[in-house]
Amino acid sequence: MKNKVLPVLAVTALVAGLVLNPCFGKEGREFDKGVNMEKITQTAGRVQLGNFAPEFAHFNDDILFGENWNNQDIDLKTRSIITVVSLMSQGVVDSSLKYHLQTAKNNGVTKSEIAAIITHNAFYAGWPKAWAVFNLAKEVWTDNEPPITEKDAYAKTIMFPIGEPNNAYAKYFIGQSYLAPVSVQQVKIANVTFEPKCRNNWHIHKAKSGGGQMLIAIGGRGYYQEWGKEPIEMKPGDVINIPANVKHWHGAARDSWFSHLAVELDGVDTSNEWLEPVTDGVYNKLK
Image (cartoon, rainbow, N blue to C red; front, side):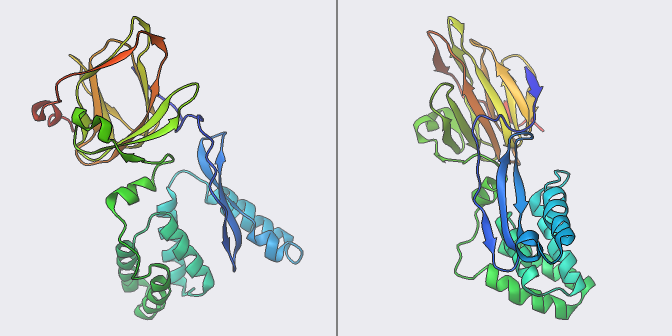
């Protein structure tokens, strides 16, 4: 059974560190329990202009960053790209642009992506501006940094850690999966991440009473399927309630990473029975 919830269960409190910028003051991200998202907070306006221009400080900290940057209609990576392009187009190539270049990097923009963004915008904003922005970007994306892998880039899009390769259960999976324990007390919860095309075998969560499992999608795109039924597409916020003693499988789409929280439900005489792999014939029918 599939339900929809706001991503993601407030099972674990997430607290991100504050980032201090010498020109802009302090920006931080905190876990907003009301909407289950990382909330950006900014204090630069009050730190630098609180006494001189309190109204401007309010607009900067509470409106620009407090409301606009926390709007969820577009993600932070896209918002950072828009900001960099806007400042470059205006010819703003001072410390404020460098700050937003660093923010873009923190939000998942890679060196190759920022190079392509600046090059593309150069045709519209002007070649000299592009040269100036490239000089700042080189200070943010240094040559000695290792390239960001596909796994690293995906990890920045989800709220929970990917964890380590799921070697203990590798024989029950086609492709590479990862496992990160989220809660080991009271209710056992783990984040399971699948690389594209990865899926687990058909299996059954057995129990005399109670038992079963709950899946909560937190990133990417994947599928869940019960034996004899049509597959169900899963996207962030989707919830699957798996009854005990039902044969099923779940995993990633062909073109996407996929992560879900796996919640173990208490029951009597519970156990897992791993069965045959999901054949390519079954899997390749998925969209």
